[in-house]
Image (cartoon, rainbow, N blue to C red; front, top):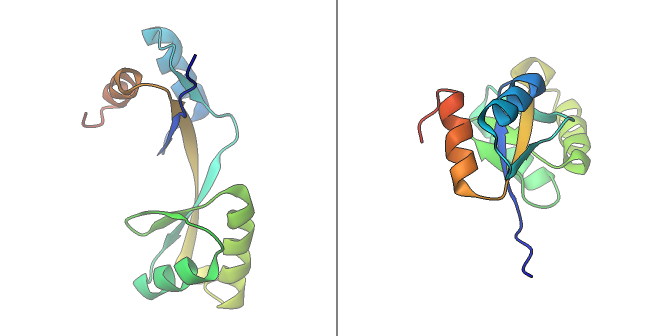
Length: 116
């Protein structure tokens, strides 16, 4: 038997909405994560470059939003304080969903009105 590694996708919707989508559509190969991911929306592009070099390991970038692991999130918070960028950063909570196949991901995205 072969174990597959799930794909983690982040969304800007509530956990309850994600659970409703999973239940209503009978999705069996995905799991919304109850704890939110914290994203950091940087207003200044230079700060994005700085944070990429200041945080250990790889972080994910979506346009001007940085998402890291829980340990990296603490490092990002420290970095924001260090460069006194609090006024230039907006913190956003994101929902993480694990997908074990592309079909469930497509159905989930369609339910949210996102492109396939």
